[in-house]
Image 1: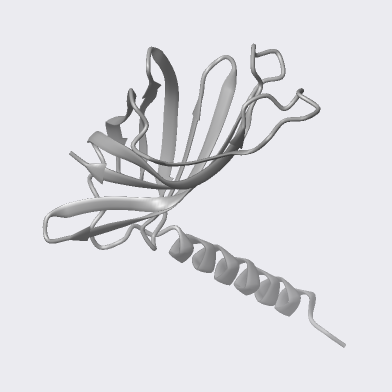
Image 2: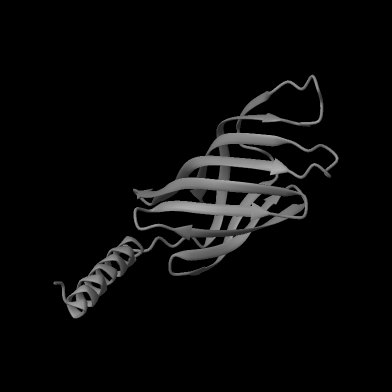
Length: 157
């Protein structure tokens, strides 16, 4: 016959182990990257549809440095940060997190559009980079509700 007390100890040990394992997955890296500042945005390669309501829409492929785009991280507290993405005169609020493997997850939004970023932070020879992918969409209520996916690169200025 099993002891109810032993079952409680085993169950407690399993829960403690799960909590410890979960804690390690979110532990701070040795050196948290400082992301505060302005970042130059470059589209390495991307595709979009300008208006998803158009029945004969053609995809638009693009690359290069889009004009009037600024990404600014204005505040950072450890592994979380905030700022904005400015596209011409439109400002989207930006939030993000740094994972322990230096992966970066960000999202930006305004009243009509959303963007989701996933990238990796690297620093070499004084150059700080984030490379990854971005997906975004504009609300169907926008004048031209579009969607897009891109490979991007951010270089800290």
